[in-house]
Amino acid sequence: MHLIRKAQEEDIPGIVTIEELSFPIPWPDFLFRANLSNPGFIVYEEQKEIQGYAILGVFIDNAHLLSIAVHPAYRRHRVGSLLLEKCMHLAIYYGYENMTLEVRENNLEGQEFYQAHGFEKKEIIMGYYLDDNAVRMQRKM
Image (cartoon, rainbow, N blue to C red; front, side, top):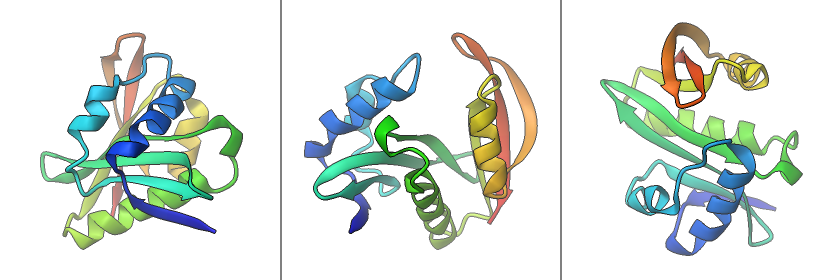
């Protein structure tokens, strides 16, 4: 049985492992620690193992997905979808009309994932990442 809950201090090592396995330029642990008070920092846990995480923040007047990742061993098991859906519910709960995110321009699989969840491409942001451009995507809540 799975549980999606707010991230806690003891989750940070598992989250950092997922981050390092998921991104070419991973966030350092202090950025995760800085988000622990954020009610939109959630984890997917099954049998006391962190399998994925998501961080929902605010950008301008939109809910904004800051980061989401799933451990490679649990991808394609709906973990990412369940985390994203929980973030969308949080956005609605806090009264946001739109949700935005950025995804690497060369991450076509990621773009398809977000499009399958109702996000649309809005713009290309040149040089957003150190090694790639970003596609900003948006979804109405």
